[in-house]
Image 1 (cartoon, helix red, strand yellow):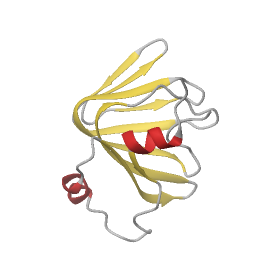
Image 2: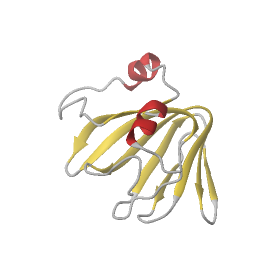
Image 3: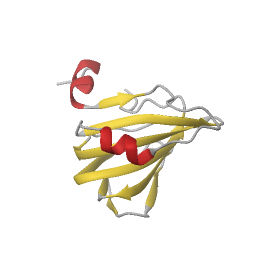
Length: 129
């Protein structure tokens, strides 16, 4: 059974619009406090050819990969697990990990977790088909 874009839209609240321009202050705490969705992702800003995204997540994402882009995760609060085919990376606040391009992975958060992600602006968050 394949997953459709409508399935992703129902399960994840992903916002690819750039919320802040260069030179603007970003109130991350206010964004976290305002969020009510269990798997929320908002693009905060663009830095050169990359974007910085804020995630407020709890639960699990689906298995996926990005054929041509690495993906950086930094944990602000909570606990974030990145399951990969050969290991599970267990991240706590202040820790980060880069998922190499082409690596199958499934992010999970057993509790409410705040993460920052850095990736190329053109990445498809749900993975490549």
